[in-house]
Amino acid sequence: QMISQGWKYFKENFYYFSQVQKTWYSAQQFCMSRDSQLTSVASESEQEFLYKMAGGLFYWIGLTKAGSEGDWYWVDNTPFDKVQSARFWIPGEPNNYGNNEHCANIKMSSLQSWNDASCDNKFLFICKRPYITSGP
Ligand code: 2F8
Ligand code: CA
Image (cartoon, rainbow, N blue to C red; front, side, top):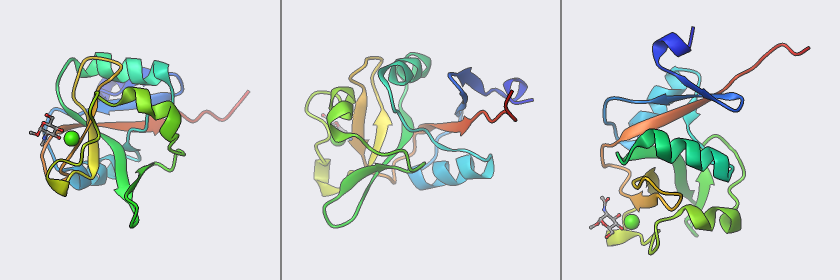
């Protein structure tokens, strides 16, 4: 059972808060090996759940850039809403520091908690897996 393996349940999904640090890509590979993906953040309540659980430590989330424009997207294919998501960045972020910050993490215990960082950095990470039931 997932709970006994350390997954936390919130609103139809299970979340895994790692205890080891990995690069963004390696973290996503780990999540996929557990039938999950680095977490998306699709609502304020989900963001609140995640930053509170993160407790001020740095955790990779499933947000990265694609294409020549470097548009942000969720690796689990949740549509990225740039307007609704703007409030979740730390003020001044994303700043693409050193022109090499193409992955995002939760860095602050605050609704405004996201930072863009180099995908090669090793951080803790959060996997998300939908809870599927067979229905009524
Ligand atoms: O001041 C914000 C800035 O802080 C660091 O760079 C000095 C962060 N780097 C990493 O987390 C690797 C930047 O991403 C951040 O914008
Ligand atoms: Ca940054």
